[in-house]
Length: 126
Image (tube, rainbow, N blue to C red):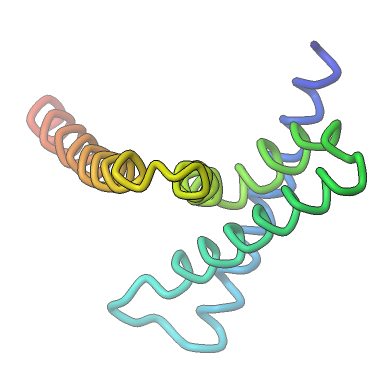
């Protein structure tokens, strides 16, 4: 268990560093704008890599690398990739209604949770 946890932590550090580097690169190429292009780019790349890894790991017997790659590296790079994988898993199982509900609740409640956190922190710390 400790070895797996260490691999997740190492992967998370690598993923977070890659997220930062990718974000800086996008900002250097496209400049600072009003639209969060760097985050969108990271989310798309991370989701693509999650999908590619899931298939490659299953076909090549590399699922033992999942904690390091999926939870660690890709989780540190973007948690959106895990969200995308869970959504597609539901869709592939034919649970389109559940997938839709999951997307709506995940986005809506996550944004709502962030808003509530902002409001509470501002009221307490103001």
